[in-house]
Image (cartoon, rainbow, N blue to C red; front, side, top):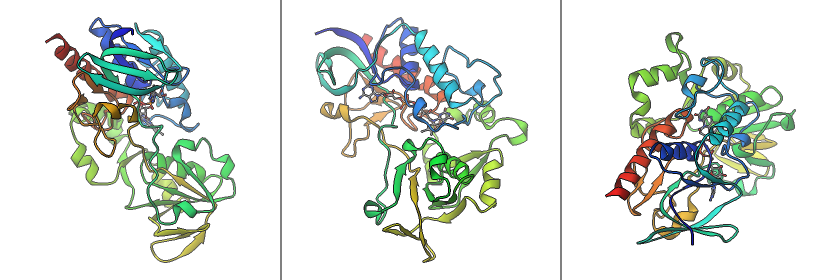
Length: 349
Ligand SMILES: Cc1cc2nc3c(=O)[nH]c(=O)nc-3n(C[C@H](O)[C@H](O)[C@H](O)COP(=O)(O)OP(=O)(O)OC[C@H]3O[C@@H](n4cnc5c(N)ncnc54)[C@H](O)[C@@H]3O)c2cc1C
């Protein structure tokens, strides 16, 4: 069986940043990617998606985003940028190669892919994101709801909902943005557990990411502070204005669903056509189960991206892995460098 020094699973931004970090240490990694191209989940995000950070703060290490650094790039620009980034790496990038299982023994790891191929690797970095594991909350009556139910992962554009009554569940960035664009063609409620928490996109004329970077907050381990309240929604004023207009109409989370009806917290019952769940994601790491690297809920046991239980195993791209920007374009490179440095230092001991 072939043996390689390091295998990265996933060629999204996290996997590509990890491969770049490996190159910096003079290592050529094997990168196994289930899809037939690099770039991860970006091509599957909704059509109108515009980055919440300017190009200047949206690049991976070693390659600036082209064009005006102050502009907010579109989804397809990120797709193109990541494709270009991948083409510059010194890596063995293998597409159409889904890792089904990882096993660990004293000699290292054995990875088995969907076509039955096996590869031995001294180190493994899991960079498989969470888009393939959409979280569907256990809402009373959801399983028997007779209208359309879809997760934000399945949403592309508002047109199919023209003239409908839609409830978007979840008050994070995706929920607010999707509700706002749906309101151009549909009657929309935004159902959230607490009022939307806003963050001004450009305080004192500078983008918020400039302030995050300048203050050092971007790299700070703020998980506890961040998780205390609702996810802050970055806004230049347009989403607040949309909600103030009454469509979308933000309401406290409904108490139950019944057939095609929703019962609101004040007892009002209304018929709706579609329910759109913007309710987040969970890490997609099932393939690691045989190694004992996951807890009972399937979450990785790690500190700063280094596995607590399996030597030689690291993670890149987990939410709040080391900071609140860990799972973003601007933050993932910092974590990739850290994880590679730690894994390689251990291997050289
Ligand atoms: C709607 C939305 C908007 C966002 N907007 C922004 C933004 O404006 N700015 C920002 O910085 N961040 C944003 N993010 C957050 C984050 O940057 C993206 O989610 C990003 O795509 C995560 O990259 P990743 O590489 O960790 O995961 P992914 O992009 O999901 O890539 C994971 C890769 O792993 C592959 N894979 C999965 N399982 C396996 C397996 N078993 N074997 C082999 N390959 C596998 C997948 O095919 C995929 O290519 C947004 C996220 C969402 C959902």
